[in-house]
Image (cartoon, rainbow, N blue to C red):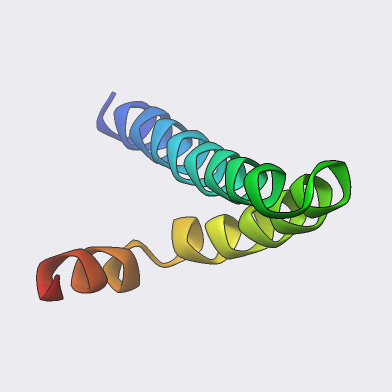
Length: 66
């Protein structure tokens, strides 16, 4: 039961972090450079979000320092 709960929490964490990073990249890219910027920065946001979702300690440390 606990393992299933941990899997669900990790899945929700991953979807939220990757989705937020991708959305932020796409919005910033759209504001600065239009479609091409939205695609480029959305892709970069997806990659960064994937890295941050894999290592949540890094993201939490960055948020704690702000």
